Every structure is written in C-alpha cells, then in structure tokens.
Image 1 (tube, rainbow, N blue to C red):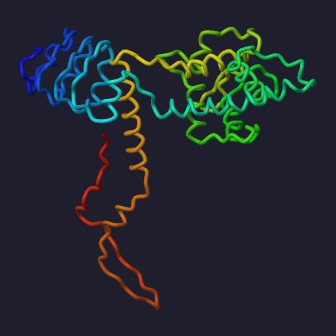
Image 2 (image 1 turned 30 degrees about the vertical axis):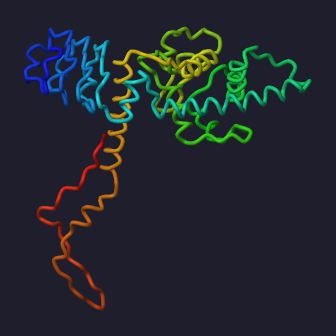
Image 3 (image 1 turned 90 degrees about the horizontal axis):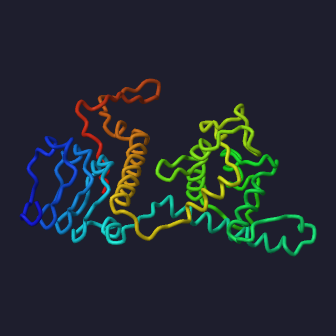
Length: 311
C-alpha cells in the first residue's frame, strides 16, 4: 500500500492478525495508526516512512515480534524524532547508571594510585586494566567480610554512605537506585542482573558461591553477586552501541514512557484525597457550649478530578 495517498487505514487488520507478517505503508498521509494494528502480533516488518505521524501509540509495544521498522520523514514529536534519527535511546536510568559508574571509577582510580605508593599495600594485586582494577577495588571495599560476594542489602547501605567512604564523591538517590536495579534485577534482553547470572552458575561448590541455604531472596534484598558477575554487569552497562535496530530502540523508548506514565498515575491515585475535602458541602452548623460544629456531607455528583496527560 505504498504511495497511495492514504490518510487512514480501514479498520479490519484484526482479520489478518494471525497471518500478516509485512505491512508496507510508505509515502502516504497517515496521521495515526489504527487501534487494531496491535492485534497483528506476528508482524515482522512495518514501513511507515514518509507519512505525517507525530507519535506512536503505547499499543505498539504489543508488536513483540517486530524486527524491522521504518519511520523516516515523519514529523514526530521530540524526543521521538531524535530516537528515530539516531536509532539510539538512553533511558534516564541508564544515564544515572553511567554517571554513578564514572564517579565510582574516578574515586577508586585515585585510591589505587595512592595505594601504589604505600609499601604496606604492595601485596594487593589488581588487574592491569585501569577500569577493571577500579571495579575490583570497589568490590573489595564492599566485601569487607571477604565472603567473595556482595548482596543487595549491604550494597544499598554502602552506596548510601553508611559503611563506605567515597572520598568526596556523592551519589544521588536516583544514581543509587539505577546501580542497584541494574546489578540486582535480571534483564531478559541482555541476561544481566544478579538473579539472571546466577541461573547460569548453579553449582553451590563454586568458590565464593553461596550455598542453597543462602540462596538469593530478592524481597529481603539478599541477592548475591560474585566479583566476575559484578564486573560483567558494570561493563555491560558501559557498552553503548551507536546504532541498534530501530524497532528495538523505539520499543525501549515506549517502555520507559509507559513506566513513567504508570508511576505518575500511581502517585496521583495515592496522593492525599484533597478533592474529597474540596467537594464537601456544608449542610449546616450548630453551636453548643461555645463550641461550633460543622455538618458536612459529600456533594451528590462531584466533578471528577482532572487527570494528568502524558505525552
């Protein structure tokens, strides 16, 4: 259906949902996508280049098998236009993670230089690679009990400055959470995260590996992370590919936006219910012994609270 001057797509894509693999809509006048496009769960290729699209619906996330996407020459709103133009996107959490790692490596590098000038520290051995050596020193300082692993609970305490001196470096709460989530939460796409990595090394006899009785308890913050797992996870966070398949990049962008919208909605619903107080109707008052009491009741049909809009 390329170059047909289409301004809309007839509803009915759901009739081909199980069989549609390729949909070519380049060079038309589309301003929005049909709602039933998300029913095409087997769609692999989608060409929407040279249309008039300004945004993509969240239902786009349901196209999990989509591997090839074309969106060039659309008047997309910012920052989606940059995502499409560069075929890359770094979430706020990834930016916080990167900033935190830079701070930690800088602090550890300074301490390594100081230790190298101290004869009493001559027995310490670290990797000849500066970045890895900094991570090894950081892990060693976290693992004060020399167990060979760190867990989420102790890591949080150290990152919050309760047990570890960062030598003047301050991590923001957002940076701390970014590091904790990256290290201790499994990522199904990259296979990183403490719980994901441990599944590939189940042997309880491995040196430094916690026995089954000390298995990870995520809810209690006791997930274990070995040195190699820790370094692998941090190094993976620093591997930024300039170009990635646009379909996966856009999916990542929309996933972050959906998560932000969900968090805002949750915060909105959990806020103090001031609207209920505002919508109370003073039905009367009485005075007794110098005390004044107001009799209030909810308005019969209060106006619904305004809901924030999300881009």
